[in-house]
Image (tube, rainbow, N blue to C red):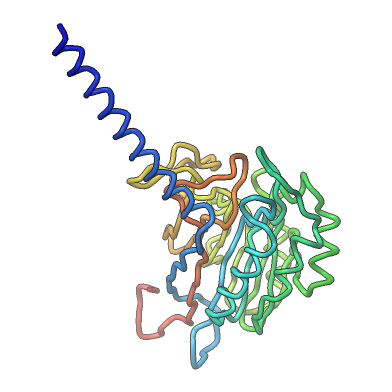
Length: 291
C-alpha cells in the first residue's frame, strides 16, 4: 500500500513538473507573439495597369494596431514605424483598427496619441488608411482629424490616385458599411494598378474581377491560433478561407495580415504580428498566365 502511495506521489510531482514546463513554454511563446518584433512577410505579384518601371512598387501593409497598454503603447508603435521605414516602401496601407479597446486594458490613448507615431512613416506615394470596426466604436471623427494633421489619408468608401496605383479604401465590411460599387466608380476616374484597401477580408469575393489586389486585416490570423496553423475563431464569415495570409483566387490576390496589436484579451499565441511587403510589378507581355 505504501509503495502505491509513493508511486502516485511521484507521478503527481512529474505531472505538475510537466504542466509547469508546458506553461512556461506557452508563456514564452505568448510573450513573443504578443510583444515581439513583427515578422516581415514578403510576396510578389503582377499588377495589371502598372506602367513599366525600373523597379516594382513596394507596398507595405499593416493593420489592427489597437494602440493601448499593456500590449501597444505609442513607444512600441514608434519602433514598428522605424522597422517599416527600414523596408523602404513606396506606399504604406493601413487596414483599420488603430484605436484599442477590450478586456484588461490598463491605459487608453487618444486618437492624437495613437496616430502621432504613424506620422513618422516615410513613403513617397503616401500613407492610406481604411477604417475598421473598432475605429467606429471608439472615436472615428477624432481619428480622422489626427490622421489629417499627421499627413495620412483616410479613405472611407473613396478612391485616390497614388502615383502608378489607384487605391480604393472601403469602409468596414464587418459592420456592413462598405460601398463596393460606389468605391469602384470612384476608382474608374483614375488609371493605374487597382488596389482595394479593406479592413475585413470578407469584401474580397464581392469585388469585380479587374481588382487584382486586395489587402485586409481584422482577423488577427485568429490572434490565438493552433500550433499547426489555422485558428478556432477567425472573425470572418468565410471561416479559414480568407482568414490569414495570401490567397490567389480567380486571377485575383488577397493578402490578409495578422495585424500588430490585440483585441479582446491582450495576448497572441501562435499568431505573430506581421508586416507584409508586397512587390507589385507590371505584367510581363511575354507571359500568358499572368503570373
